[in-house]
Length: 480
Image (cartoon, rainbow, N blue to C red; front, side):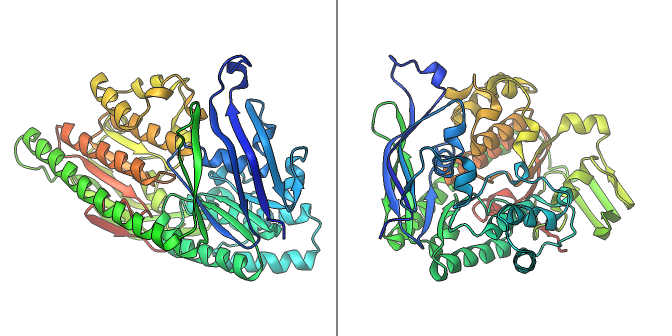
């Protein structure tokens, strides 16, 4: 029996214009070879920016059609060599959920978005209606909901539903759980496992939160640094999932101990820099607030307050209003009723508040990583420290939007804290980050606390169990 997917001596390099034929080319990966059988559930993991998205985009046909990408080698899907196939031809066999769902949404309403790819495949109306009902039940989305009003997690669920509705037997999902709450994540994983076991779907899932995925997978493909000259990464295939889980558990425990020691050291320095007693003044006060959007009530008679130096984590299912609350506190939108007051004026908010957005693309606009970092920075020395911490040295002259999603997230975070705000709003700051990058982010947060003249106030939104215990010690849970 032929494998569902076979990769033979696959190589990829970018920026062909800069790699002249007589010069040594820098390869993302070189001579990769592996096979994936029908019905296998594969976890593809590795550090942020190592080439995971590049590999899956080579498989689904996106990369060979990019003008700055150069590939060698062969990809066989269902036994057929794909070199001359178009993206359109591959999409009949391979379904892809990309890392940024916002870039895939084209319709105003949820039902239209889910039905559209099925219409392109020529499915019958009754079949489409049955599939639509099943997918709406799975995701909990309303068929007439406006796509523009969906939360990040709901958009992720929508694009996953669109892909599942097309019925391709090979599914590639790039960080599909990134913005999903725990319940939705578990439901999707259970569905994917059922499809692989009972209906012979081949599933390739890219995810950094490995501990969540490992109970469902058959094999792990780990992207690791390559020992070969001018090659960035290679793949290490692990068959023994249980042994891998034990290694991961040990590594997490050791990293936690190291992190605790580092945090204690930074906190001691922070205490030395703190002058006088901790100021517990109220920075934000929300009194009996109502907020409605699209006929839907997100907040009803809601009250809350944030005091200086507090560290809050806002929790709740997708679509419950977490990001909307941040937008209200930052004056991006106005409440329907009630009172929202702040110690800061609108002008002061621009200078003293930092807001790390859920989508880093929305806050990166300078022509280079270097200019982005120094744009609003208060201390060049602190910027240099952040560059070293986040390992940005080799990408300072690159355009920010050319970075991987994980690298963009780290850059966006570094840019905001380089401005040394008094209050920091973090909307899903660890999405798309491997564990080492999460540690970098948390360490940078401790460095900012040590530098702050006033006790730093942090309010975070997160579904990431790796980060939640370190982001705050007070919790606000919202419900629909």
